[in-house]
Structures are given as C-alpha cells and as structure tokens.
Image (cartoon, rainbow, N blue to C red; front, side):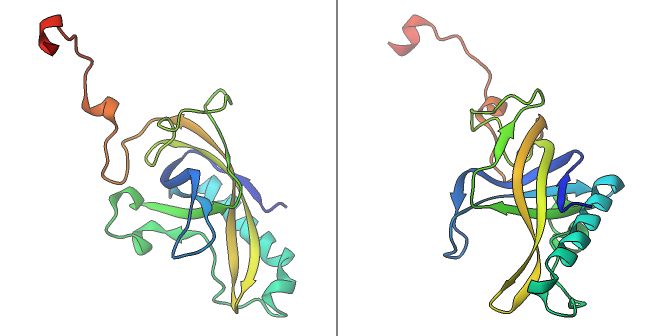
Length: 177
C-alpha cells in the first residue's frame, strides 16, 4: 500500500497553484481544495486507505497509541461547507506544498497560461498523505504533487472569466475617432 493517490475526476477550488500564498502569517504554500463527488467511491476508498498507511508509517510521530480523534484531511462537504453548493454531495481534501505542482492538460502537456487552470475547472490530482505532530497538534496531512486539467467548469469564487463575459467585436475605423 502507498500513501500516494491519483484521484478520479475532481473539481478544483481555492486553487493557489501559480504563486504560493501565506495563510494567517504562515510560510507561503501552494494549495488547492479537491472536491470529490461522493459517487466516486473508488477515489474515496483510495484516499481512506492511503490515510491508514500514513497513520501506520507515522506512528512514531503520533505517539504509542494513535489518537481516536486524529485530524484527517478527508472532510464531508455537506457537514463542513453546508452553505457552499460547490461542496454539496461531495467530500473534499485540502492539499498543500512548499514546491510548485506540475500542471498539465489532458494530453499531459504543461499548462503555462495561468488563466487555463482556475478554481472551478475539473481534473485529476496526484497527492500524498503523511503524519504530522506540530506543537502538540497531531494528524494526517495531504501533500500536493501534480495536477491534470481535464475540462473547464464554471469559475468558483464569484469572479467570471473575461472570455465568458465578452464576445469578439469588430471595431470600425471611425469608432476610435
């Protein structure tokens, strides 16, 4: 068994994958929230299995007896984000990394245009799970490895994309005056 998982098709949210962001004064990290439909039982089972492996591999960090209330990264969108319809009938995992993730398209070609990968698009993610013990806080965290965009989706976060708002227009010579 491995602590690495390649997901099925997920929706990306809170995608800070081009520039690392600092949260509450922490060291800047790349991060993304992976919204996993509850119907994708295969991905959810792979994540649960990887979390169990991470618990066993990280037992030395977690203490002699693994705490029953250990923090794990797999969360239920219906419980933890009840007011966000993007998370309805889904689980989610927040993945982070200090190094920039590889970002490719469906043909595994690098995506260089930052407008191509955004919160709301769909794809797959390569993630790893590991144990942590920081200042007495113990748990399993999710590391971000690589991302693959499979298709566009409606942007999340309330901001539309220019190409969705405007049509190309022909400008007449006299118009600019």
